[in-house]
Amino acid sequence: MSTIINVIIALLVFSAIIFFHELGHFLLAKKNGIYVNEFAIGMGPAFFSFQKKETKYSIRAIPMGGFCAMLGEDEAVEDEHSFSAKSVWARLSVVVAGPVFNFILAFLLALILIGVCGYDAPKVGVFSENSPAKEAGVEEGDIITEFNGHRIYNFREILVYMQFEQSGDEITLRVDRNGNELEYSFTPEKTENGYKMGIASAGYEKGNALDVVKYSALELRYQVKTVFLSLKYLFTGKVGIKNMSGPVGIVSMMSDTINQAKESAGGDAGIAVINIVINMINFAVLLSANLGVMNLLPFPALDGGKTLLLLVEGIFRKKLPIEKEAAINMVGFMLLIGLMVIVMFQDVIKIIH
Image (cartoon, rainbow, N blue to C red; front, side, top):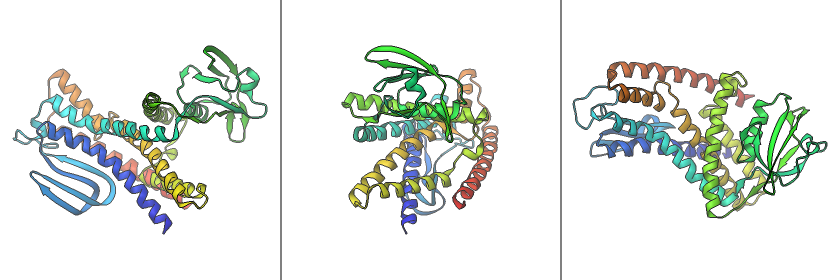
């Protein structure tokens, strides 16, 4: 029963993120006078719907995904309220609104998360025994500002680089020590779990209202940057497709996180609820930022692919026939479905094992 409740919570979070994405498309479509035929949350058959003016609002049976179906989106329609009849810049605003709303949601949730928990300062805490960083001269309380030339704003960025970019090569850290910029180079220690610098974070810090806004923006930056780094590692072969997770894998991870939040509460129901809420907000920040970035990739069927075609149309003032655009998007959609099936199969295998 507990697992079912966990899955329901995870699906509700997932659906809320999709809702906000589609809400962006919906609001900008309405703003530009485009008729929305249906605004749906979920996929499959509708189990609840109602009609208001030209739009059907529905909740569908499978709580994954959603859509905002606009008049004339995939076919030429002779109507002033159709998507195809609007200017290229009006259509562009509607297309990019979904990912933009995901970034807005991620930022707003980060405000709550950082306001409650504090921010992940890149400050050096304790050192492990025989720490290479300590032996090189790094000291407790130093603020790490650069890792191998990469600007650092929170400690997790360092962990990402350590996980994917290090193979025993020398590391260069630039630190701020009481206003003085210092630089240290050293070779990480090889352990059973990979290469280590021998540094632990000093933990989360709380600041004033301006700090919360600043570090919420930096949290969004971190999540977006992590997606691009993951794509870079995927295309360069440092990680494989087996490391990817789809909706099934994400829901499974969220369920595991809920269980861990309950265990860490030590039987206190109130603390358990707080832990679950904080962890789900953290997941929502990650997923919303990921959805925003992935949808902006210039791939057919994604918002980024449509954006690319609209930018080409705006620059060269020549519109691609809507039938060809629909065909391109269909091919892209089928490729995405194929990838999702592969990833979902991998997720199921991981859960079974």
